[in-house]
Length: 131
Image 1 (tube, rainbow, N blue to C red):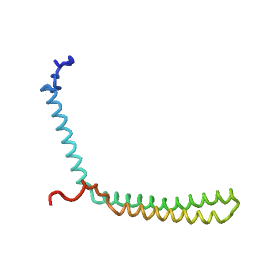
Image 2 (spheres, rainbow, N blue to C red):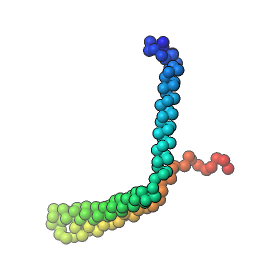
Image 3 (cartoon, rainbow, N blue to C red):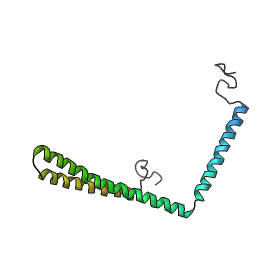
Image 4 (cartoon, rainbow, N blue to C red):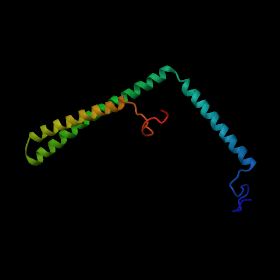
């Protein structure tokens, strides 16, 4: 009995032989499932991988095009609203349409560069220590 009266655990939280066996069995079962999952992943058909790659490329293209269109639409909408509010038609609409277009192009370039460059883990700081 433990200090708090719970059966099966010693004062240090030691496991009984039955609990240790159950823990090892669960651990072995998890290891077996992980091995099976890795084998299934590595044995994936090549055409399934290419379909996944095409889907990812289509998703990236849709994201980038929506950023461009979104910038143009938001800029135009802001210009249209300000023109109707300040009675300056069509000057603010033209100005904000151009600003929205520039913002959309900037988002497009930044997004494309982020997708082109793979993310690298941050360095552990400074120069290599084994030199």
